[in-house]
Length: 322
Image (cartoon, rainbow, N blue to C red; front, side, top):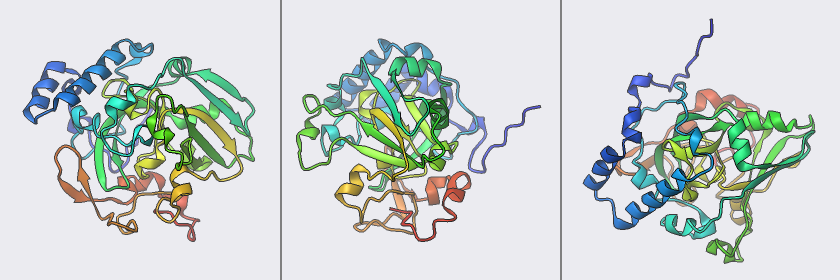
C-alpha cells in the first residue's frame, strides 16, 4: 500500500483554492474587473491566453495537481502576478510583461553539458512531452520583500538530472538563460554581465522542491514568467529561479551568478529566505502579498524548512541567507 507523507506545512486539498476558480474564464474576468484590472493588464492576459491556445504543448495542461504541495494562503490573482514581473532582460521595472512578448520561444532548445555521461541538446517541446508534469502550489518570495502564491506546472529537476547522468565529480549545476539583445532591450545595457546565470548544488537540485517549470495557472508558461522553461526554488529568494533557460551545465566549480557578480555583498550564491537576516538596505522580517497588499511575517526558508534545512546543516560558515 502506497502511503503519502505530507509535510507539516501542507494543508488538505479541500483547503486549497478550488480548481474551477482557476479555469473558469468568465468567473475570473468578473473578479478581475471587480478589483480594477487595467486595460494593459487585460491585454497582456489576452495575449498570454492566445499564445497558450496555440502552444505546441497546450495538450499537457492543466496537469494533475500534486496534493502534497498546497498552501496556507490564497492564490495570487493571475491578473496581478502576470503584470508585475522581474525580468531584467526586458527592463529593470516591474511592468515588463508587454515587452517580454517580443521573445521568440519557438523553436527553443535546451543544452545539457559539462560533467555528464549524456550530453545532449533537446527541443523544449520534446522535453516537456516526455517529462511527468504536475501542478504544485508554491509560495514565491522576492528579495525585494514582496511575495505571491502561484500554481506552477512542471517536473522535478531531479528527473532532468537523472536523464543527464552526471559524473560523481559534479558538485554544482549551472543554469544560463538566452541572450538576444535584438528583442531583449535590457540586454543592450552593457554594464550587466549577460547572459543571466544561476547555480545550485547537486544536493539542492535533487531536493523534492526544485522544479523545472513549464506552465502556470493551468496553461503553458507565458513569456513574462520565463517561457518556455524556467527553474523554481521556493525556499530561496526569487532571483535564484532563473527564467528562459537555454543551457544546463554540470560542473565541479561553484557558479558565480548574475547578481552575485554585480553585488556579492547583497545577492550571494545561497540566497535562502530568512526573516532574521536583513538585506543591507531593508528588512526581510515581513513581506507584502501581491494583490491584497497585506503585510505578513516572513518564514524561514519561506516556510519550507522541513524539506530543505538539512541541506545546510554542515555549512556553518557560509552566508546562507543572502
